[in-house]
Length: 539
Image 1 (cartoon, rainbow, N blue to C red):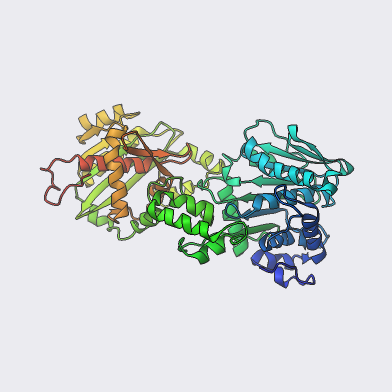
Image 2: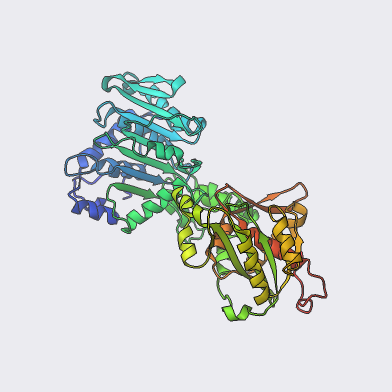
């Protein structure tokens, strides 16, 4: 709805936006225009921005969000929504909106002894919405007469109703989420894990109509609580999940949208032309065109698109294209190859990759292992990685027990050497000296230890990027390798050399690291190798 005024009646038709709204009507919910107007009128009458005169005037999308959040009611008259998510790019005015919503929840929602919690990643971030709410109180005589500001504790108190609004940050160890009437999560994508989220998950169980509200831009961590909320909201809106208690509002560019298109800017930025200027977008596009490394920041902050990292090593579109045109299994039999091994610590992901030259292309065959007894723990910690499915589909091997079985890994390398002769295997010697010695001295596998410094890894790391960019790397869509590629960043030394790195301990890159080791072996092949007539990869 893009009108600046509300419809004159409580006809629900204008407010049925997705599958969850249809379910809500069937469950006896209705839309109350009086409730919607009451929330909007509170904001526009009493809430004032500290940096400009007069009351706050909501933009069309802000008014629409407030109307949906507070206008929808259950058959018993309480708010329909128990949770909500608002995803919108930066500088569209979501922080002032959330500050005003927080004040309405504190002063005018009718909740006995309201407790409003504003949660963020650290003190500075937690202060943004709180400070805006406090500034609104200070700028409004009506609110200032009713609310006490306790800035030293980041509290607002409403003595008449025994109400309190407080800011919390994830970097403070102790939290008390008990009996919260509303919890607002600011910039959810910054939350480093699930601990604080879990602390407040059931904070409102004793309340008649608790509310959990998350606001954020897109992030980079697809194992995060923010990605979980984003994905869940999309499934609710599409009808894949039947949850009429959740409101999901998202402004973002769609898959395949051209980031240079002004129509895409407008679709992703509901405040374009008001708080955002078209000329600024045009300037950003010119800058990104000259400096492609800044594209991810533009996509995230301007178009609300999830990227894989601040500086993505491998472009996802190019990587996905490399999943097509993979040879059948019989093509590989008897063909010589180069190999890379990344032998993990005893409880982590271990990787073995074989690389085959096919003209100017390189095909990759992958093996990966995890201990069987760690799988349940990996799932339970909410990684949102389909470990069990990968095992069932044959993309991931398991070792009995709680540790990597190095003998099992060694046996697989020997088996692969018989099927596809390994010309050279490069491996990180860390954790692997004993196994590498057996492979070389007992099993006849030509092994070279490859140190994991910038000097050794720079060439094959850049070569992999070039092969992927040119569409000459072929991985057959292997999901574990793709996950590792998604997790990979690069770090630089002072000379401009690069090597792989990962963002967090949970986000593994082992199969990609083994691929880089294998390319190291291929690049080091002497001119007399079987590939000399076809040309050797160089950098």
